[in-house]
Amino acid sequence: LSQTCLYNLCVCFCSFKITSAEFHFVNVLMNYTSAQNFCREEFSDLATVGNSSDELSLAAVVPDGIVRTWIGLWLADTATWYWARPDHKLVYLNWEEGEPNATTPESCGAMNSDGRWFESGCDTRRGFVCGGNLILIQKNMSWMEAWSYCRTHHTALVSVHSEELQARVGRAAENATSPHVWLGLRHAFNFWYWIKWGDGCYQNWAPGHGAERTYDCGMAGALEATRGQQWVALPDTEELNFICFTSQDLKTST
Image 1 (cartoon, rainbow, N blue to C red):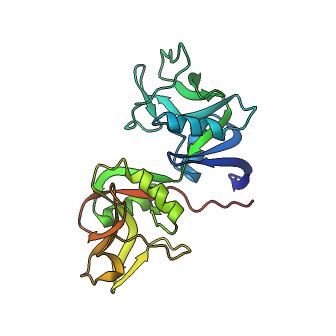
Image 2 (spheres, rainbow, N blue to C red; image 1 turned 30 degrees about the horizontal axis):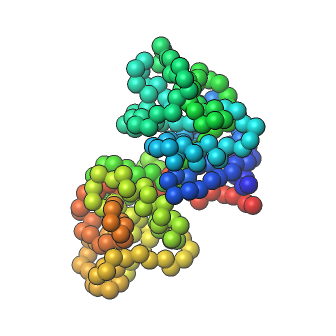
Image 3 (cartoon, helix red, strand yellow; image 1 turned 45 degrees about the vertical axis):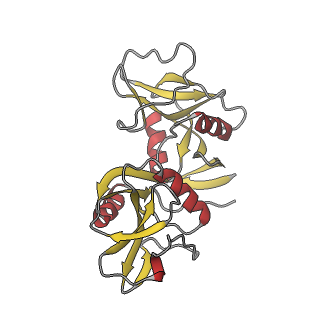
């Protein structure tokens, strides 16, 4: 159990991690919009579900006794439900029998204690589940454009300082539409460095890349979206998908 303080509120949350996803339950009563704003500030967004494994881990993070929680379902119009953002359509479905039955666009989606989804008025106040603090941007940009985009819309291009974070970044990269994704890894004066500093000396360079060779100016680090998901050096003018941190490191204590 951890605690973070935001908006002058001390919020208790628990987290559950498996290989398919990472979720955080926040035990504060908020309407859908406020819950989403909180998740976007501290993590990435309200939780989304892509498969049955995600669904099991999402349900497991909610403590016993919590009956209903917000997740990232919302009704963009009277015919189409989306995950959190309008470009994330539902593929996997887990609705309660008879749901959804919306006839107006003022509806949002929540989850029962059994993991099944139901339609609800967006102004209802309840606890909620957030997704992790990494987000894949499925837009092709140069490294500098990606850096600027993450700084403007989120926090920073992702830096990878541990094997655990490498695994999370790799899972996010699996959905990329480009063969590599930009990382916050930069080369200058024959030296590789992370633009967002962190502890540790973890490295995961592909053979023939990184400190094993010298480079001209204008190189940056990217992650293979598939295969070994190792780091490679590419010209920073190449246009790739990229992964952003969506918040500063959480101010938590145990």
